[in-house]
Length: 114
Image (cartoon, rainbow, N blue to C red; front, side, top):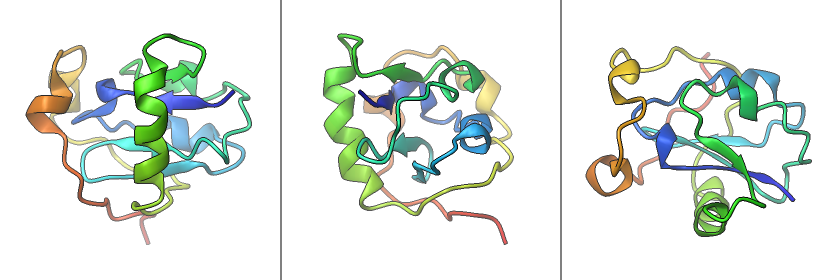
């Protein structure tokens, strides 16, 4: 029963969740994060850390469509295990609806900062 990242993360990409994850199951895209569902141990510590409320348990009805999305992109994007600065305009995109259609980018992020 893993957690998944939803479109609320797009263009916000706060990484507070990454810092508390005990199993390093977050992967970074250009403008959002995903969780590798098979690595997630369902501890739930990431969910309250997300300022954008983008992380939900897979028991939520909305989670079904995000489960395979998270799985697919966690195989394509680099693992992120350390907190990074959020985009400068992240707060402007908190709570914006329809972000997937408008802003999602499939390109990978840069991974851990050196």
